[in-house]
Every structure is written in structure tokens, then in C-alpha cells.
Amino acid sequence: MTSSTSPTRKLFIKTYGCQMNVYDSERMAEALAPSGYEIADSAEGADLILLNTCHIREKAAEKVYSELGRLKALKADNPDLKIGVAGCVAQAEGDEILRRQPLVDLVVGPQSYHRLPELEARARQGAKALDTDFPEEDKFDRLGGRARARRGPTAFLTVQEGCDKFCAFCVVPYTRGAEVSRPAEKVLAEARDLVERGVREITLLGQNVNAYHGAGTDGDWGLARLIRELAAIDGLDRLRYTTSHPNDMEDDLIAAHGEVPELMPYLHLPVQSGSDRVLKAMNRKHTAEGYLRLIDRIRAARPDILMSGDFIVGFPGESEADFEDTLALVREVGYGQCYSFKYSPRPGTPAAERAHVAEEVKAERLARLQALLAEQQEAAQQAMVGKSVGVLFEKAGRMPGQLVGKSDHLQAVHVEAPETLLGRIARVDITAAAPNSLAGRLSVE
Ligand code: 5AD
Ligand code: SF4
View 1: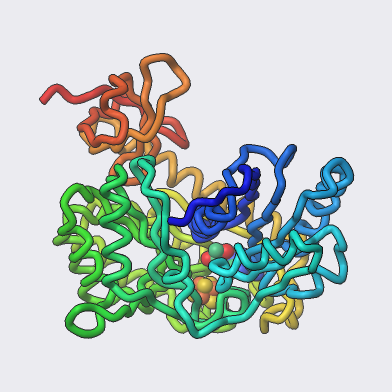
View 2 (view 1 turned 120 degrees about the vertical axis):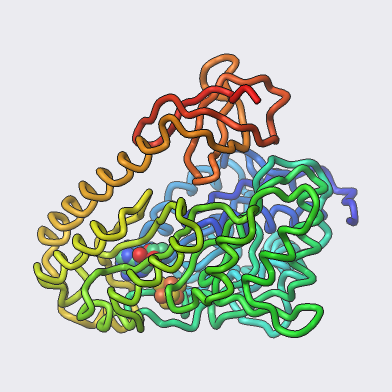
């Protein structure tokens, strides 16, 4: 890595949205390190502020503009402060941002983060800098040169970006572009590097991660093969992946859930609705029954798997009967933890043009769905009491002498444990459950 002779400058990145953005923010910080930037904890006193934005729900662009408005005072205090917008809103809005908000110095889409040092330098010279292209080159190649510092025991690793599914409500195919998978060798190299730096658990990321098809040493590898090869890395104890589409859950991936001990028993598999009519209108290309039978097969491979999902209520045309089909599906699956949203139109997507369900109806349905999901989550938490689980300890707890980690099933667990266990996995007997966390004690082995 080249080191800079310029004095250290402070970089503040505010990250919105999904884990992909968290990962991207880390990469942006690494890309800007050779330009002399160090991460700061707050916007105050920063020399460069980047908003890594998310466009997936609710008036995303408007929220970014109001956040930018709030930064005005900082720029008045420090005329040298540069402000950038990154992420999916940057991709979707492009130079409109520069036109609408003169505070902004640079706009960079998710495919162009390797060009940040150049864009930042241009902004420093007083020019407005914009890059929202979808280049042919592999941005991950250009984002190399990480500092080999030690890091926490869990990490995200992007293996795939973009989506070809075009669900009628979703902006991802427009903002993140077509599906692209990283070559397996590059993923493996990055994983080995992470493990050398102390990482024990890697979550593979992709907008449609189970559609992964990357070049391997002997032809094309699907996600299952990639997982098997990653699991063979010494010191890499846990693997997860998110987010998946039901139609890409291939047999070998389901089999891996039963055969690869490192692959943790938690799966986020969004279905969005339990009504075939709505699923069709959403262009999901699967039925409720197809999804349920898929879960049967996954559970046959890994009986203790904890299922997670995403739901949208009040999609255009959703009737009360359609919504009740969603409740019925939820009852049949029995989820451990879910995300649920009111439909909100995203400009440029097909569903945005359709007649919308009334806001009060959406709110009422969301409340009913969330009550049911909360009940299921509590039941799943309670079911852990009395069990012995593996916990990877990530940080100190709020109480002295306490550590917090994640169970195999991705539940937060608080345990009285020595600090020497930080970054390591230990067996824990679960003694109590709350809706969002578990408590336990170290098993005597
Ligand atoms: N309205 C509401 N929810 C949405 N999601 C995506 N687009 C929309 C939208 N327009 C939800 C889906 C997806 C999750 C990441 O966000 O449930 O799985
Ligand atoms: Fe969006 Fe996921 Fe559908 Fe792709 S599969 S269009 S990312 S909701």
C-alpha cells in the first residue's frame, strides 16, 4: 500500500441500508487511506463526509436531501469540507444531486468506488466530480491494497452484486445493475486474508447471493461449491450468506446446509407475500406452495435451521384475502426473525404506476403481521432455553465481566465470560430468553 506524505485528514462515512453498504463503506475507507484519510466517528471536524445511501424503501432521495441540508452548517464552519453522496441514491439520481444541492462536491455510484481517490482529488481542486457508470472492469480488483490490520471476528464479504430478477417493486436491478459474480479465487483470497486478520465468521453478501456463479479453478462454481471451498480454510469456523431468492435455492446448496458444519443454521429467504395473485403481480416467479415445499426440503437437510424473511404488505392490488394468505404462510413456516415493510412506490419500477392500497390499510396490515412475527420470534427465542449453543464472542457486554456474541442461529447471547474468549467460539448453556437476546453460562466441558 502506498503511504501518503500529506497530513492525516478525517473521513466520516454515514452508512444507510443493507450489509452490502456496510461492506462498501469499509472498502471506501480503504480506498481513501492512501490519500491520507482516517476514519472519524462524527461528521464534526471531518474533512470529507460521504453519505453511503440506500434507495430500497421510503422516499430515499428526499431523506438524503434533508440530511445534506443538515450538513450545511458544517460546511459554513469549514469551507474545506468536501461532501460526497455514494450508494444507490447516487446511482439513481446522478447529476441531479449536484444540480439540486450545491453543497455536494462528489457523487459516486456503487460500481465506481475504486475511483474515489481521483474523484476526491478533483473535488479538492474545486471541481464537481461525478461517476455513476457501470464499467466493464472489476471494481473489486481496483479496491485491493487493504491495510492488514487485525479486525473483529466477523466480516462481510461481497461475492455477487446486482440482480436480474426485476421484482415489480424493487430498484436494485436499476441501481446495482445486472448480476455479476466475483471470481472464486478472489473471494477465497479475500477470505484467507480476513482469517489471518482474526476473522472467524464470514457472511457472504450479494443482492441475490444464491445466484452466485463465479469462475472457479475448474469451471463455473455455484454458491454451494464456493461455500465448501471456503469451509476448508483453516480457522474459518462459520459461514453465512444473504440475501437469497427462492428460485436460486439449488439442490447442492440445500445439501450443503446438511453437510457443511461451518454453514450456520440460519437462512434469510424472503418470500414477500403468501398470495399467489400478489406474487404474480410482484413478478416473483414462484408460488407460495413452491416456497413452502422448498422450506420443507431445506429443513429436511438441516432440521434446526432458523428461517428469516422479508414481507411487503399493501402491494398494489393486495386484498384482505391476499393478506390473510400471507398470515397463513407465516403460520405454516414459523420464522425465527423477519423484516416487514409497507409497500412504498419506487419511481421507475413497474408497481409504482399501479393503483395503491390506502395508507391506513397498509398500516393496519403491517401491525397485524408484525404482531404475528413478534410472537414467532419470541417462541423461537424461548425454544433456545435449556439448549447448548455455540457462541462467537464479539465484544464486551454492558455489565462488567460480561461478553456478547452470536449463537449459531444468529441470536445475540450475553454471557459472563473472560475477555480471553473475545474472538473465539465457546459452548454456552442458554438460561433465559428475551425477545431480542439470550442469556446463558459457559458450558463446563
Ligand atoms: N416497498 C417496500 N418494501 C420494499 N422492499 C424492497 N422494495 C420495496 C418497496 N418498494 C423490501 C423487500 C426486500 C427488502 C430488502 O426490502 O422486502 O426484500
Ligand atoms: Fe429486488 Fe431481491 Fe427482487 Fe432482485 S430478487 S429485484 S434484489 S427484491
